Picture (cartoon, rainbow, N blue to C red):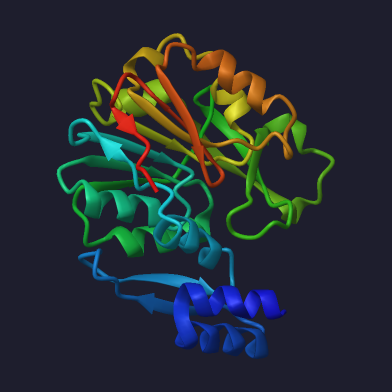
Length: 257
């Protein structure tokens, strides 16, 4: 409890902590609006929820604060959640076209609301996958940032209220549908589905200049092997926070701390 209170105070301040207490007492989620000097528009978080540690990763820990050789023109944010990384990128690279992909309904609704003022962010309700098909979105009870995906016939033994069907898209389809010749930054946080996505990358990996990914080997065995086998050819690699960064030449460079 004390650790959680400290995290809220350091992340969203005293007013955010009060909202969290209100939500706990009312046993409901309340919305907390944030105005940041480095963002042209305010956005909302659900409190208490995993939105707060997500916000901490993006804006407090600055996990996407790297150097770029040239301003990126195309960014794909796969596993966009409520849009915080997309908002960060939109303010840092206002000339970039950003595709924000999120399958879960409540996350997607808040994502659309948060990114509405940003004309360069395109919301897409879908899951990133290795095939264009319908798959199951599963709630393993990890909060709003922990939804997992599986093939439809893999969830038949789960309770009916723990999963539902969503559309899934490949990188190739995303690039075709949104007229992307290449992807400057591919950010991926898809709770283990990276194992499937990187199982066959031959048609698109050469069109990607850099990848930022959170790997979920602890949730789905084989994620690490699939990712590294499917992402050969990048020149630079480093880690920051929970993310692995891959970059061709100097497209992205780690910022000195």
